[in-house]
Amino acid sequence: MTQRNQGKIPSLYEKYKDHFFIGAAVNQDTIDSQQELLKKHFNSITAENEMKFEKLQPEEEKFTFAVADKLVSFAKENQKLVRGHTLVWHNQTPDWIFTNKNGSLADRKTVLERMNSHISTVVKRYKDSIYCWDVVNEVIADEGQNLLRESKWLEAIGEDFIDSAFEFAHQADPDALLFYNDYNESHPQKREKIYTLVKGLVDRDVPIHGVGLQAHWNLSGPSYDNIRQAIEKYATLGLQIQLTEMDVSVFDFDDRRKDLTEPTEDMKAIQAERYEGFFNIFREYSDVITGVTFWGAADDYTWLSDFPVKGRKNWPFVFDEKHQPKPSFWKIMQF
Image (cartoon, rainbow, N blue to C red; front, side):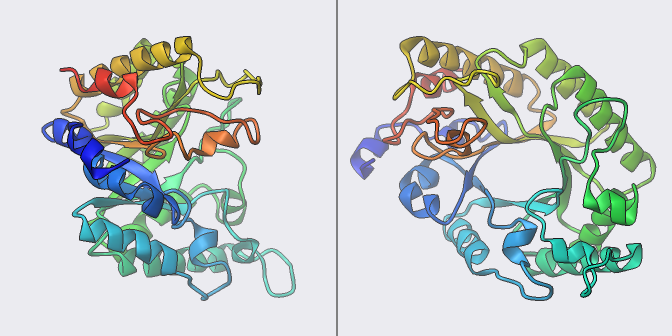
C-alpha cells in the first residue's frame, strides 16, 4: 500500500481512541512487510511467537532476545503499546524445563525455580517497554469435568503453578498488568470454567488484572448472545477484559474445503456483518474492554492459512492481501 493510498483512509485506532486500543500480532517478517499498515491503523502490537518460551530461552540460561527486541524497538519508535505474550503455556515450551540432565523428570522445586528464573529475566528486561503480559495461557480443559488441561507444568508443579506464575511476574514488574488468556472463551461450558479459575485467583489475592478473550471466531459462531454473556460474566470479576487474538475465519472449524483461491462474495458480506456485530458489542462494553488485538494485521499473513487445514488460504481480517480496507473495515468504522 502506498502512502498516498493510505492517506485517504481513516485510521482504525484513531477512530477507536475513546473506546479501547486496537492491536495487531506481528512477527519478524510482518513488522517490515506490513509496516505502513501497522503505523497507521494499530496502536498496540503483540509478538505472535517471538516472546514464547522456546523462542526466548531454547536452552537453560541461553536467552535469545534479538527478534523480540526488534519488535519492541519498532513499537517504541512508533509510540505503540506492547502486550507481552506469553510466559507460561503448554505449547512451544522446551523439554529441558521439566527434565534433569540425565533425562529423568525434574522435581517440583526445580521446575518452579526455572519458571521463576524465566519469568523474572524476561519481564524485567522489558519492564519499561511492555505494559501487560499474558502470564498464563490456555490452561483450561476443553472437554469433560476437569478444570485444568493435562500439561507438564501441572504434572511437575501441581495446580498452584498458575498462582506462582502470576506471583513471579508481579515480583518482576509490579506495574505490569497481568492477564489470563484463553480461547473458546464464549462457549458456555468453557466460560464457566475460565470464570471459576480466575475467580479463584482473585479470591486468593493472586495479582491478576485482566482476562484475555482470544476471539478466534468465524462466520457462524460464537453467537452474539454467547459473547455478550461471556463479557458480562467476566466483568463481574472486576478485572479488565481484552480481546487478544481476534480473527474471523471465513470457514467454520469443521469445514475442510480447499478449493478457494479467494473468498466468495457471500463470505465477504457475512464477514462484514459479523465484524460489525462484534464491534457493536465491544463498544457497548468499552467500560470494561480496554483493548482489541487482531491476530495479524492483513490477509497476506495469518496463522489460519495453516490451521486447522495446512496450507489452506484464509482471509480473516479487515484489510485484504494488498493491505486495502475490506467491507468489514468500513462496517466497524461506521458509528
